[in-house]
Image 1 (tube, rainbow, N blue to C red):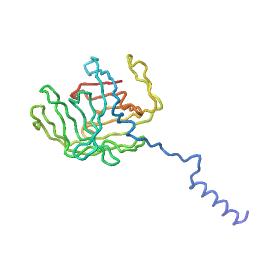
Image 2: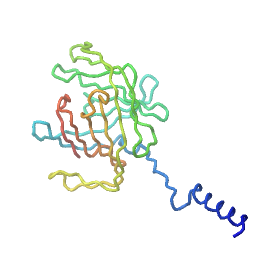
Image 3: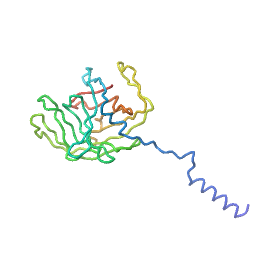
Length: 227
């Protein structure tokens, strides 16, 4: 075998090792989170809740309101009474979470306001993408919005997996099955207490269809919620 032949064979081997082939190259799918997290404005889901004490009762209806507030594009998440809701702002390609309003009644849980928003989601995300940032949280009492406490925490949200189909795993879930489902997880105090988190199953076009919380101290007391 001539030296020229040997060099040519080595070049072929090297190129075969360093150049990707069409059969091995893969691209992770990108999901439009606007179609998964938010539901259409006139669509409401009826939910049932299981609490950490074991009791089960209706969670009522749930949906989003779309609108403009102080020059921002806002979506409010709550029940039809609008007596309590979470506040989201669409800032370009980012969905920001600005806080929670829990109502004006004296027996309502405290509301929360952030000095800077939590970057809840990017408009387009892939499995294993995550959002995480630190922010200052003010706990506001239902008694004339008194500032009960102020703390700095680190929040995190991660896309865990994509499920082609998902069936509600509850005896009275009526066997509801949804297509195109993302399972995501949210930590409200990721840096100090990562064991406390909320897991959501988001069905495309329907929003949250199944929810599980490990936080027994969360004001609502809800452990599991399903449509």
